[in-house]
Image: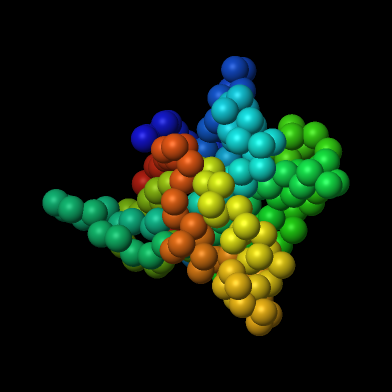
Length: 211
């Protein structure tokens, strides 16, 4: 289900007065277009009661970000490259805290543990530079971002826990890089979601030219 499309300029988008989930992109300065990707910001992602209920009930939520770079063509636009990263949010009952982790390039970057869900939401909303920079070319270019939000099913929770602890596969005793396992696992076996609890958001920048 496509939930929202946000078209932005080079400035950050304001947070909605109704605290609705929003995805926005912010272009770097013209002189930095070929060195840095756009800033991605996902605000108010835990504002809905349903997703909070699922997380509090022990269902981890996965936020998958994909940012694509396109060049404008005469008849068809051309795909150039893409960058992806994930943010995982889960509730730790023993600690009564929300844990937020970013996963990028097979590495885990802890964003913190929080007692309030609103603080976890702010961690998700931290601007992240997309790992894809514009190219030097005469054609106009633009970025398109997609955010997919999934709540993992009950059958997946034990597997998520094992992966976070570094187990290669359920039932195996070997150890491996937890970030690498999470990255691979989320793109394969953990693609199943709970009762269709899957939402997508989109954002697109205006077209620009590289200097």
